[in-house]
Image (cartoon, rainbow over all chains, first blue to last red; front, top):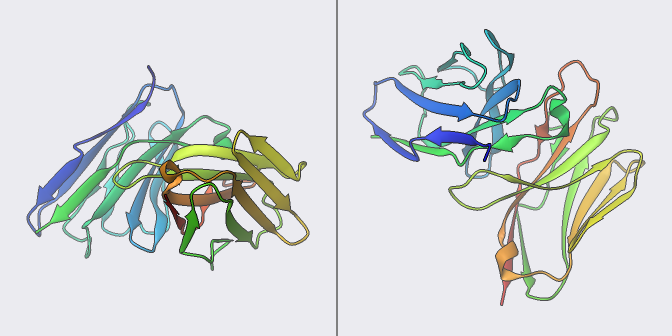
Length: 113
Length: 114
């Protein structure tokens, strides 16, 4: 079955360390996205990529970095510059007609201690 | 400035009754709307959508109504079931727009009590 996989489900890191969250899809989708969810904040867009080797900043890109070397993969690195990294991170993908809806992964809960 | 607003952070409904979740938008260029359902520690799943050429779309217990003049849409769940308890996100987009991303509201947490 096609889908979008995020790993790991739970991640713990010490303050000041960079950490990379994995997102892989086998839906042959062109576009991929990273969102962050905090209580009462809804879904906030971090980065998105419409095509391989290209990506754009979303609303809250500071302290994050991404790469899109393969169509199937869109890893997100949470750097030490991100002031409040503890959150639930969601990856999504969509077809070229992306406005018709996204498919979401199951999320990664990152806790920085 | 929020382009998609869900003004009720939470809603509590008795099992078997109707749940009505509301969503307002400000961008008159939006012409496609979606509802997503999200359980804790899981990703959102697509529930139902509507194009601006329609004013109603039904799928089983779920109906979405669109009032373009008021820039308002609502999701009706009839009858509500305890398994419907989740956070519901409204999303909007501009088909053919230059950006093309979905814009999400902040969500409404629905609790259906047995």
